[in-house]
Amino acid sequence: MVTEVFTYKVIGRMPEGLPNLLQTPEGHIIERIATGKQRGWWKVIIGKVEYVGKTPESAIEIAKSRGAILPEVTPALERQRLITAAKEELSLLRSGLRRLEKERASEYTLKVQREGIIEAEQKIKQLQKLEVAIPTPPVVPTALSKQVIAEEGYHSNPEEKLPSDHELLLHFGIEEVGSPGVVLDEARARATPCSCFTYKSKDYCWSRGIIGLLKPEQQEIYCVAGKTYKAQPALTERYTRFAEAAKEAHKKIEAMPKGRERLMAWLAAMGEELSKRAIEV
Image (cartoon, rainbow, N blue to C red; front, side, top):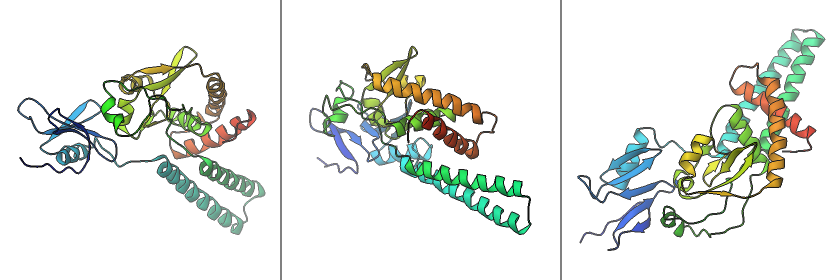
């Protein structure tokens, strides 16, 4: 009998001991096909699509070649990208100020340029404060998730961690640009149940492996292992204040075209509105 050597972590075996479930470092689950013409081959499911290869590695490569697996964009990398863009904007504003001073522009023009520089500096400070961690709701093992979570050392009732103020800010930022929650770990998000609370008759849920609260269509995909509801008066109160701030901040930028400048203006406006509500982020 030929001994198989795998690049990825073995997290499941058939009754006779043959590995049939692997996990990549990024969290993708690869399954050995048990029946049909492709028996013995491997498949990875991304979204609702299966990518099949003769080996686990080839299944992953096929998924990557089709654009199903993208390079991981962590919260830290995304924050750094925004900071870099803001610093570039600040540099342009400062260069513009020097040019205007040489050209002896009017005091009003110089004042407007200096105010733009101050705003850009404030944006950078706000972004530098923004730290994001993946929420960790309690895990209740199910038939779907037992194989995945068994080797990761999760407990059935770990201490629940609620979304922080920084995570709520990111959630409303994602909502402002019309984007769903950011999926960092597809397998973990699918295999663990969601934690939810109700606000104005709507469910708001979060899950391991996803940054930001889930949109309704995401809940259908990533809450298949179940939803855990628990009264969260403190979270509901914080969410209410953030929602009020986001509503006011949106009014200040809704006339701007979509893009980086609008997002940066929204961050500045959101900072002002949160400060009015005694929230510092």
